[in-house]
Length: 135
Length: 135
DNA sequence: TCATATAGGGATAAATTAGTCCCCTATTGC
DNA sequence: GCAATAGGGGACTAATTTATCCCTATATGA
Image (cartoon, rainbow over all chains, first blue to last red; front, side, top):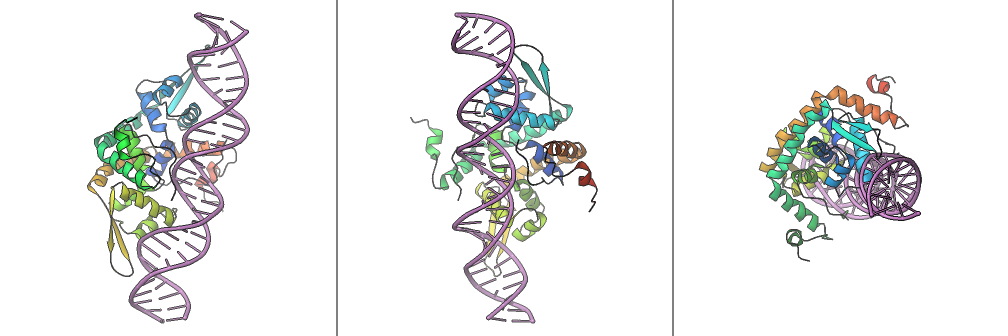
């Protein structure tokens, strides 16, 4: 396992929430679990861009941080279910606020993000290509 | 400059906000600017753990994403001031919600974060050392 | 017998982010 | 001239996070 070389800051609330929420897929995992997609395979289907391995690791971290619980049913084939803990549930309104802000400003955000990407020279994709599926 | 090799997901609001808010110090930068610490040197004093270089880079990203503006006064020695844009201002309540959640659950979070760090084997620091300044 | 589904993990590589070092500009003050 | 102040940036390295590849186990169905 990877071993940290520097200690995280844990001074204020923002440090703390950052520590448990950073991770490319964590917020989505919490959200989908909240929506009732509790089994690993369901979550993987909802987040197809993430590698299985990575979801497992981030789920484990969420569990270690006590935002979700992991229940193993002793059946074959194996069955596992995640649920939000009480603490995890209190995070839902916050995540919801984040998502709403993003949705509200969707156009603007997509535009400035793509603008920045394109000006990075290599230009992975043009702003045009991004909208029309010309292939 | 570093050039991305994979495109970010920009499907939903959570993807979008993630794209503009990820970065170790960005949320704090927005927060402190909101509090009136507008000049680079002031921000650096408020966030001493961050390297100057890194703050500059993240400030530039926030500017590119139009969450802050950068005003240069043509004086010597140079003077620069950052301000939140209208869009940036709408993010303040969300950041505030994040911080409040972290503050509210401070004890629990610090405890589980440290527990996880310690169990990573190397044990950078003991839960004890963390609280008493025994040196 | 072989493929499928379910859940998971070790080793390793690639991508990304953060941090360090050193240098530049121009003025005021000693 | 030299130091301090204020704000930056290039080149490079280190830290961290994400992704890939491949392997385990068991029961069911074709």
